[in-house]
Length: 213
Ligand SMILES: Cc1cc2nc3c(=O)[nH]c(=O)nc-3n(C[C@H](O)[C@H](O)[C@H](O)COP(=O)(O)OP(=O)(O)OC[C@H]3O[C@@H](n4cnc5c(N)ncnc54)[C@H](O)[C@@H]3O)c2cc1C
Image 1 (spheres, helix red, strand yellow):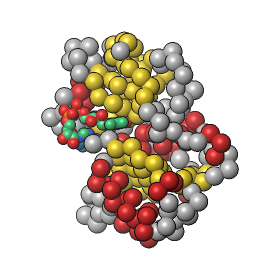
Image 2 (tube, helix red, strand yellow; image 1 turned 180 degrees about the vertical axis):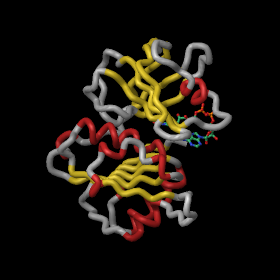
Image 3 (cartoon, protein in one colour; image 1 turned 45 degrees about the horizontal axis):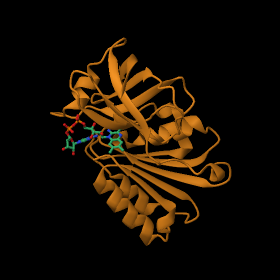
């Protein structure tokens, strides 16, 4: 683990912040994650990269977990503070040969949208559809970065009370078995989504998953 300076730390919703740090001087692929923590705590957690692979900084999109150990400490970090970063790790990446020709369906809950934001910023020509399950309206983090026709949300706890889960939206959608399906977020969403995709004839080999918790 090496130490890197925090460049900025911005709240994107009541519970979620975007932490920008110096970039480790190593090759990084969109979709990979890092181990991140503070020296004082001596404990790290994994976070997916939210920024583009060739940005000269690294962004993380982090939900502050109530009573969590690491996220409140990262949420308090200020520009100039040092954070410990190890990595990158993981293979939740796009197949390079398919990026130009194939279509991609990204399905996220909450901050599970982070690797998809990184894909879309890294490969702006990507043919994608992004389904994002969120609890509240303010969790459409930086949605201007997505083409409106490609970004579909489901808000489970909206102010008006008529909530919907992203899995309900998916149950009504057409599924192309030729597309590549990437799922990221909480375990329950991933389990339910895999079942929907398999029932619609999407082959298991076309489904990739990253479970956050
Ligand atoms: C490969 C990988 C990539 C990850 N990338 C991200 C990321 O980009 N952004 C991100 O916010 N998290 C990400 N996580 C989750 C992250 O590693 C931590 O688990 C999370 O931040 C909680 O840390 P903590 O120390 O504050 O909580 P802890 O003290 O570890 O408490 C964990 C408790 O909080 C619950 N919990 C964990 N995450 C959440 C959450 N997001 N919402 C509600 N409850 C939660 C757990 O079920 C558990 O009960 C990733 C996890 C993995 C395995």
